[in-house]
Length: 177
Image (cartoon, rainbow, N blue to C red):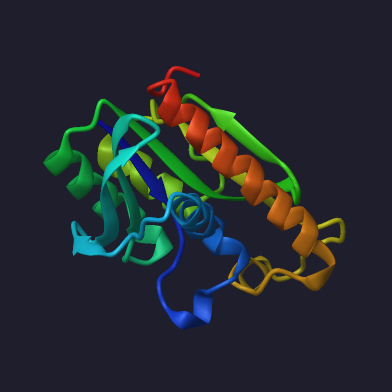
């Protein structure tokens, strides 16, 4: 079984914000496959079923971003997945790009920091979706939780497509990419 967790903040006020890139990527994956993340439990909304020939759980934590690790730990302890993949935004990568890593530090992302802290390991594959604009950001918090600027919508959309393709590859190759 593979556990895929898209990070974001719940609530209408956070829809279509930079910080919800992880939610948007898993939503796009689910839309493409005609399924929904609707079950409630483990501090998450989740889907449990089969995609691309593999048993998967796809989750969107319903904690705030900084407490994402609570949901990941509950999901991990219950489902006991063979592989886990975390999908989230990254202010250090430009719009239109993604980066896949098998493991590593959480960097500046508070949601990933919480996951690393509560799981006790940096050995967690992740897909980081770029949200860095060309111009300097003066108020990082407002920018991250703000709506995607119209200037970057196309690049952001492209990065979501890239992330979905990488999630599919992760599932199809059983996490061995």
